[in-house]
Amino acid sequence: MDRTVDEFLGYLVTERGASPHTVDAYRRDLAEYERTLGERGRSSPRDAERDDVTAFLGELHARGLAPSSIERKLSAVKSFHKFLVREGLAETLPTEQIPLPKVPERLPDVISIAEATKLLTQPFPAQPVGYRDHAILELLYGCGLRVSELTGLDMSDLDPEAGFIRVFGKGSKERLVPIAGAALRALEEYLAHGRPYLRAKKSTALQDPSAVFLSQRGRRLSRQTVFEQVRRYGGLVGLDLHPHTLRHSFATHMLEGGADLRALQDMLGHADIGTTQIYTHVDRSHIREEYLTTHPRAKIR
Image 1 (tube, rainbow, N blue to C red):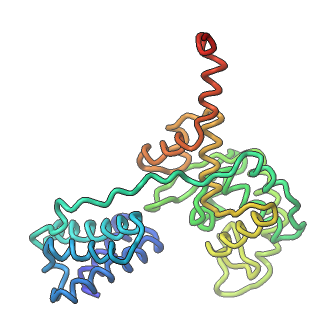
Image 2: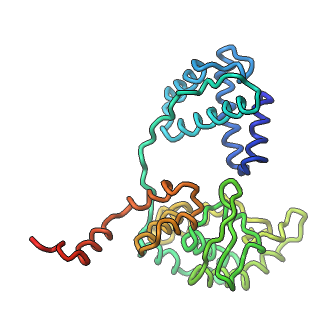
Image 3: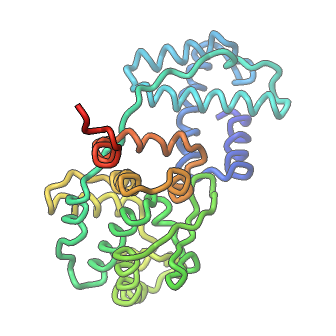
């Protein structure tokens, strides 16, 4: 890999606070781009021209990739070349005036309130892992957390008495998320009856004493385990479930309940309110119902 790519990846970590997951995605995308440049006789990305970028874009289309995947890869290339110019490592910007592909708006998958209730009130094993898994599901739905935010929680991030948890989102941006009701109760039950036993399970050098959610070996819980457990408990009540579906459902149900869009933006950790606004399109039936029951002339014919 060209040293300029390594410098760019380092910049993502130190200057922009990118997560390891984001850096890995950029590394893979730029490695594909470098292969294309090499096949076209370019010894370094600094020598790339507009035709090289459009050739890479053509290859992505030829492979039949989804528009969202093409957009992500081209965004990585654009960010990389902007970095090169800004740092004085290249003089020209070959990605200039190459538009990102238009990605069709895809409404997020959500479950109904009844389905969420069915999921969260099913019997959970009265043992450490059961308390843990119940708390995980309640926090994903009750606080709208991303999986990486949930697995990254440390004990110092919890303030149950104040009713908040501190979360580090994309770009390591810190925010406070309210926690109450069923989510808070499930978390407290896990901290009392689950975590101490998982914490004592193994005493190894790999153990992370600060982590909130632990594996059966006493280590910080992995994202993969959360994915697996969410899918498993969803399957038990007839739902094909993904962790992000619970985050989407949190946002949708909050808006349907009358939540302020700006407040929801803060809770979700969205930098752009446009990202939050997608949830206003998920289900408009409640808006029509509100109109019919409250507007003085809605029922006049």
